Length: 181
Image 1 (cartoon, rainbow, N blue to C red):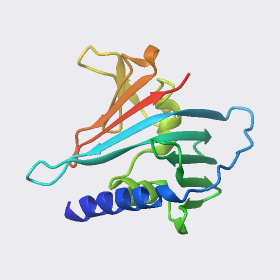
Image 2 (image 1 turned 180 degrees about the vertical axis):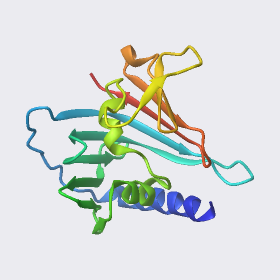
Image 3 (image 1 turned 30 degrees about the vertical axis):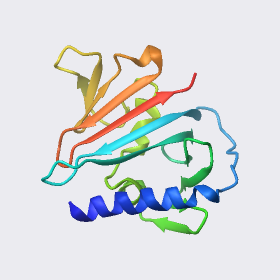
């Protein structure tokens, strides 16, 4: 738990320090069936026993598909500070200081955000749909949305561009995405 909190703090500090220098935006050629979604992303990871939560927010641009795509994260002022891209098992993260390779997207998001975020599922969740590669069912609470592999995805505000995904398993994670339309 402490390691995750340190990683989140370290990553947040790195992103803040890198705000002065940024990456050059890179355009991705989209194929049929690919998507491009942009907006604001807020991730909150439950903290230690004292209840201190960790997290951060960024502007995002997600393009491609679960097999080959790109996720760019920018500061609220618009400086591009991190780019993740993946294709054919090649998963990389670029920052203004370095480029690193990862085993898979879970390892990359764990390093970047402190916990694994299911990026392949995000391509569907951010459109208000369950990921077709995994079983899902409607939320039992009567809310609009669905549950998929331990995440509750609330789509009740989808018409306003807001998706809220929560994982209750420790450490709990809340991911809020406001999609630009």
